[in-house]
Length: 201
Image 1 (cartoon, rainbow, N blue to C red):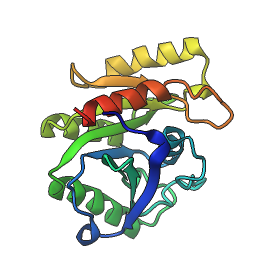
Image 2: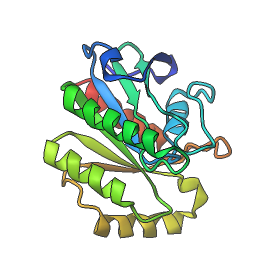
Image 3: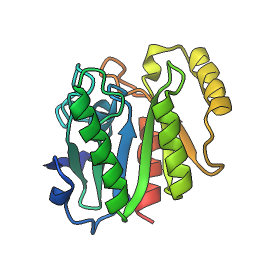
Image 4: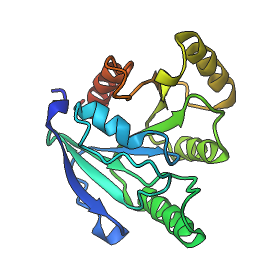
């Protein structure tokens, strides 16, 4: 079976580990810097621009937001790291929430690590990738905001990323655009199929 992405819907929001839902369904985790485009990606996957709230303020999303994927999997959108607009106290809370999340959620089937293709990976990006490798968690590298660059620039950036990032040999790499101004939303269909293939085995 494959996921019907037209049936993605909001499920639950959690501000604390104790509020996490049961993990009976396969789980896909979205991770990445603030403002990397996680909410835009959710909207692009569901072809619904109102599905996830797109914040113009980095660090505004302070909770874990869950989406139901056609009752076949759940998608958990973690708070972004690199919270330039958040207080130091909240920064610490975000880190603790994310750290504890990976510690207690034993049923994670796939992590989508989002990285802005326009910039070199941050130390936080490198640390997250290192953690995923050491934890042996399956992941896809998803480079976002490709609509901001030409096709030639995208290829050049992907080549540069391959020399900087220490990703697993079997990790799949996607370059996507989730922009509403780009009707083709390049790479989204390939990512949809890959997610279905991974979690609906």
